[in-house]
Image (cartoon, rainbow, N blue to C red; front, side):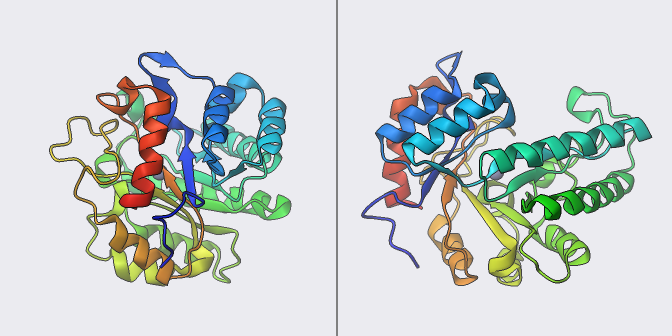
Length: 292
Ligand code: ZN
């Protein structure tokens, strides 16, 4: 297992971690400068943050700083109430794949979607099986295009508390079953983004990480699970502040062949978004060394 205690070479920052500091939206170019000042080698930005500055400008800035991507957030949200909605989702995913390519991302992360409309409190239907079928078809169609342009797709299984509104793929096993069905050759073009916040509780986690192997483990996201959790979406903890056995899980992931970045992804309305981006980034570096 790699020793992270001496440097932060394998730290990546998911830019949602430092985007809403002290009530203000921090533009992505500023976040990239803050990361560059700290010798952080990789980030994972969100599409709306990139669009806010302009993708060509972001691509140039990343290149100038020598900062790479550990992933691009995000595609997915395939289910829709009608054919027009399903088609629009596919077109949007195609654009996301193109953007990921422009930014030279190693993968496009997919939060696959669930009951359409549920995120706004108005689910168009309640059939989770239908949503899962639409996700299957959406990924299959997107994978054809992803293969054409050479952009791997990383399915992120989300904690079942988000099955209604964000993702109806909820365990690593379920994600890997889909990968095996759509990409039986393990081509490297379809895999998973493993986020400890979503999967740490799973009794099959170690076994399924081993099953995933190097070809399927495309991204690794870290934070911590706080007790109590005060907000289901936005009360993620800083590594070391919660109950996730981060070292143990990274050991499993590395034993399976993963040698990439540990991407810190913390949505924290009540704590880290109340502090400055500088303090948050400095703490990420320190905890990457001591707790990840
Ligand atoms: Zn994640």
